[in-house]
Length: 240
Image (tube, one colour):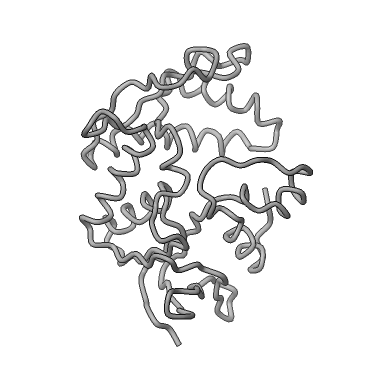
């Protein structure tokens, strides 16, 4: 039995979840968002909230490939860079005014962390969303822009509702998720897609030890405990 149904189910309501929800809605889909915390924002609210400019796509791809240690294929890096170049205009369409990012002394070079790597001169400066009061940090401004756009579209958000299991049909296609909400278990059907945007495992000590070999102090949203990674693994996904 399904309690709710949508074309697209988004698990996690941070910057990535809001972006996915807005994009799916504007493409004509009915969207439902599940968020385990009582409010959204994810790591975006804790971040600098910047978008990157690229001066030369080929050089930028070479630069990123240089610190990827051969793990990420060049075609994937190219897709990442090419899609990132669209972010500023997309944010402007949502109502953003982008201004130069000046709030950090890192990285050590003007635009990159590793200025000695080939292609570093293809990386451009960062920009951030201008706030309405001039006081907020970049991530707060970015989140404000995204969350306002979600609210304006009247996209349904289920807060304090933690997804715990992906549901599959007989063809092993993901067709929804089971979550624990304020009034108990809820099942949400996704007719077209389920998008996992529920963060990493930085606040899960066991997973830190398993995958990083050490326990680290984490920064960001404490809700990032690897839930989505575990759910994806349970339906056959591998880590990469």
